[in-house]
Image 1 (cartoon, helix red, strand yellow):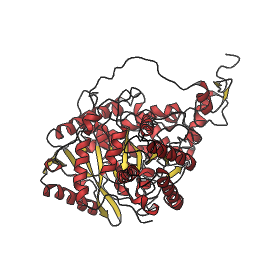
Image 2: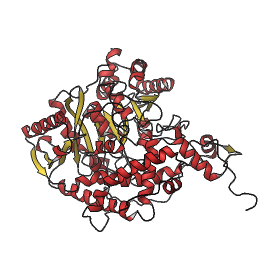
Image 3: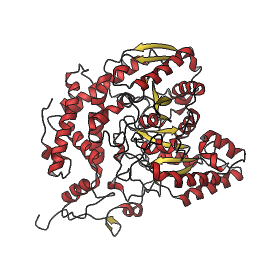
Image 4: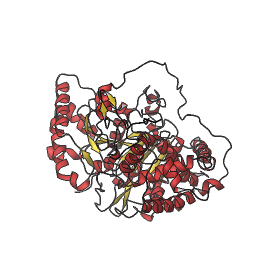
Length: 96
Length: 485
């Protein structure tokens, strides 16, 4: 199992800004927690993963359209919207 | 009579409503008065729309008067954990990320409660996004254990358990990913049941770890727990893991005195407090005295449950919480020049410390180079744990342990030690990993704090768990208990 991790890389993957103090704190706590996970590394485990459902019923159903939230309901809860659409910061810049 | 209504069970309230001895409005007014008296002290509710409650109560009374009552929950208030959607009410998950979100739709369980005539009664505090075991991770407020206001109520459904123990409401919904119904139920002296995975729809439950999450009933007695479970369990095509199996789960279980009860070998060695051990041992002795067959069972991989859970749950959480990007709903940072800045700043400002910790952990165990060592090994361990539990439950009807090793701790006592908090769930986690039904039943006190025992059964054996709980409850004085506040 891994001995360490790069907190900056993790934060970037998770899309989180961390302060210097948070980096120190989370690094320490994650090291401790991952140490506890070492029991998994030492365990004698089956080679296969049992993905069976607890309740063995068919998960298949007919593909029928159902009701969906309308644009008005969706834009009402959006942080920003304009003309019935959700607005976000510019995605493509002028020079691209 | 109104000043005693908070002491009655939901079933008894239903009988009085049916007999015309009580109206839903009178009941709701009494509970609203109690809310004003106690909620600031306990911190169970984060939101209560009194006018809406009374409007619902009047509609219920009108239906009943017109002979159109909808069943045993007609006119009964049910409080709802703040991660279950109720159209037109806040859906905050006790997070700054969703602080201003009002749900545009009903969860399936909410639809079921409306169809049953229940009163949708307020929003209950919780650990942020259901991540925690003490409700201290709520970004809105603290919740305190009604039995000792210096102690935590458990979590993440701490608001639900505290509301029941304080007599603020007769029934509540919780959700359980690793013990979040059963652990607070134990700490607050109430009954909490996590159903078989697939018995109750997750549609409208804000996702934390989808392969583990289940909604379940919380109440002050077994009869009420069963009443609420019966209303919630039904198939729903909007949750592909939910099936029409309610009849199988709720078929009467026969004589509880003939149950075979398995005791996992060595459970008292897992940091169990002396008074918890005494109370749970007394419960085992009670079942033996009633004629139940008690035997020891081996669960060799039980020690893997906590690390397995925290790999699987955080991996799924890091994926599920990827949706909070500031685009469609939830918090959007005011300082967002580019889309990536918008996502990163919004998430950094909106999530609290425990949620960030779990997202980082889940991101790590799924990341390139580490997924095989952590996530895939955890899935293999989960398979092994599940196989061992199913094998044990082929020889006995239920497995009995404490619900939590020790009683409720002081607020703040474990706040800086996440690993210690994770170990709170050592007895409850395996049921989630294996998808099995489990219940916490009050069985005594450690000092002045409640203690519960925990029963796990085979898939769809809810009726057996309830029957076992009823046998114990009927011979002891722990049903309907409320803290003196």
